[in-house]
Structure formats: C-alpha cells, structure tokens
Image (cartoon, rainbow, N blue to C red; front, side, top):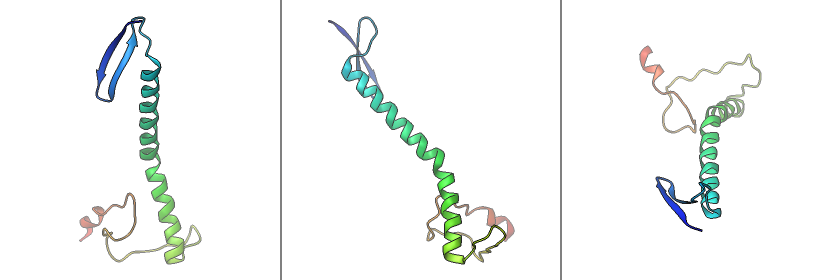
Length: 95
C-alpha cells in the first residue's frame, strides 16, 4: 500500500492514499496531543496552585488561620520567596 508523507513542525507523518494515518503516525499524533494537553493543564492550573501555596504559606509562616486574619508585608516581593505568580510591580506605584 502506498503512502504520502507530510512534514510538519512536530514531525513527519505518513498517510495512506485514502487519507488515513499509518499506525506509527497515529501514535505520534496522539503523543503530540497528550503533550499539548499536559502543557495546557499546567498553564491553566498554575494560578490556582499559586493561590493554594500562598494561603498555605500564610498559615504556616504568619499564623493566619481564619479568613478574617490579615497579614501585611513591609517590603515588595523579591526573587527569594517561592511564589509562582507573585506581582512585584504594583507596589512601585505607591512609592
């Protein structure tokens, strides 16, 4: 059975003349799709995990256990704390 080859940025794929991918090409396409979905899940949940880490860190580090507890930091964030999506720019407006 003859095949047609298609070159893409994610690899080369072979299709039969009927337009169906070969078994190897189908597996490569599913692997590429799995990788893309994993990357998207990571990006989608990064803010949620950052918020969870911040809340957990406030409880462990500053003792904030209730939703009414308030912690105030004297300085802007630096590269030292482990914060996934910390905003270090908004404090510059208030100097």
